Amino acid sequence: MFAFLNFFNVQEIENGDIIKLNNPVVTIGTFDGLHLGHQLVISKTIEIAKKKKGTPVVFTFWPHPRFVLGKGNFSLLNSFDEKKVLFKRLGVKYVYFQPFTKEFANLTSHEYVKNILVDKIGVKTLVVGYDHQFGKNRDGRFETLGELAKLYNFELFKVNSFDISDITVSSTKIRIAIEEGNITIANKLLGYDYFISGTVIDGSKIGKKIGFPTANLKLDDDLKLVPKDGVYAVYVEIENRFYKGMLYIGYRPTIENQPHIKTIEVNIFDFSLEIYSTPIRVYFTARLRDDIKFKDINELIDNLKIDKENSRKVLKEMPQFPKSLINNYI
Image (cartoon, rainbow, N blue to C red):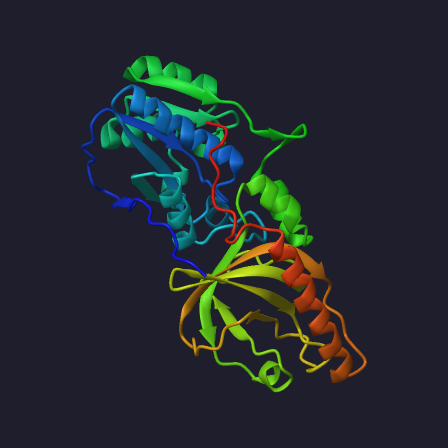
């Protein structure tokens, strides 16, 4: 176990404030997941700001536009607080969280740029991803921004897609990988180990009785995307220290017959402290197996022993801490 790194504080700018910053270099996006493609855009924004002796600013939205626009069932790769953590790790100082409302969604692309980026933030340079769309009905494209940049006298840069093995990194691909339990692929596209955040709550204590005490987790955000049911090798962050462990997601079919109650619980290795009501963060490193109904409790115990051994093997081959955001493409 070891201390976590310290990162810059994200300064949140309240809606309605007029922002007075030196030579703002702005990037825009929902940034769900803050994957490698997003990281490239933000890194380019910071790089340009340094060259221009300006201030890098991230302009993003909350809640996610799909919730407001009612576009089907949807889960988040990052909660609001998790997103702030990731921005800090990227070295972002100023983040503007724009409340995404139906009124905001109805702004035309011209109104969006003039009322927000020009009048409120005072944009001098705008950096966007290759597929950025904006304004009512997402009718604004890069060509639209080019015209508005000339009109309002700001520079415009486009960042190309981030591809891995000819696959363009996207939040959709990552979401599918997590839903299917393919954590290895998800982490590769994210550039860091996928994680969930929550608070330790009281459980049935069955794990303790059978030799595998677990911390039951209540997620901070019910809309957070939870990986496919099964057993995973994980790192657990508790009060800025990391521990190795294995995490179970599922309905405990061998022990209980409650198919409507899903459990998220983690067995933390070499750990015996009471942590009820403590906030923790769990980083997924590898998927070990599916959720299985065993014939009896003894078979379950035997398999948990195997899971623990396999988890230790996997984590032994990994760094001594979860993979954080990487910037080796800058």
